[in-house]
Length: 279
Image (cartoon, rainbow, N blue to C red; front, side, top):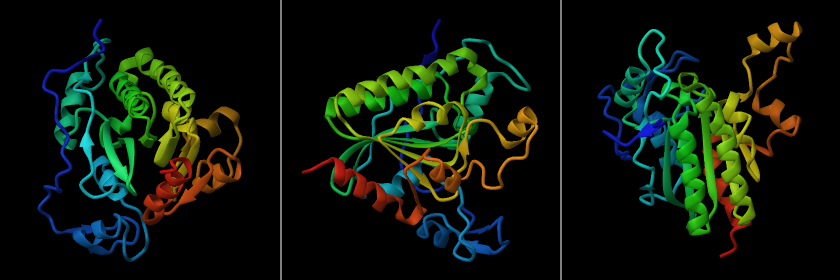
């Protein structure tokens, strides 16, 4: 049974935003902000400092040396092996997400340069069915790590995910093991894997590949954890700490190595890459 197909693959381009509106309202402080000013400020509200969501394309642009991106994503997209349907058929959800994002699935794999160091990078996009990891994302992550091995260069994964994709059932959960196996091959080659957790990094992604980095950096404001607060509270019948599943909680308890402000994230990655890669 085919898990994914290559028909009608959508080629990713780092083109500019097509939305013609010039202004946006910050949901935190309510201020009306000029969109260009927000973009130039790393998608951070200039009035209150609240972070706006970054798309995968915006994230890539913010981290890499200008003009260095080459899309190396495999030409595949999700099929419907379980014939899954809730309020709408799974293929319709895929098509809707593709139309909304311009992506074939919830991750982009690219060959890039960061501070003059060649890197393979994978960046998730939460807009695509909650950045969930199905068969295609698992295959793309493995492909990215295998490309890093072929090119003998570091691999960076930027996570923004609600976890495993329920529409693919056990096939989705299998990606946790699959990506972990290829990650071990990366380690055998002594190639660095840098994991970047953003808001949110949860469930199957957090429990597997995102937590396996040689260095794990969380963007300030990241949500990091497995199940949601309400589910955990109901399961253990206890109140949770106020800062539970925050970047500070994860750092305090050793789940991550460092927290970086968005505007300093590229610099943090550059420093880590220079430590590992001596040119």
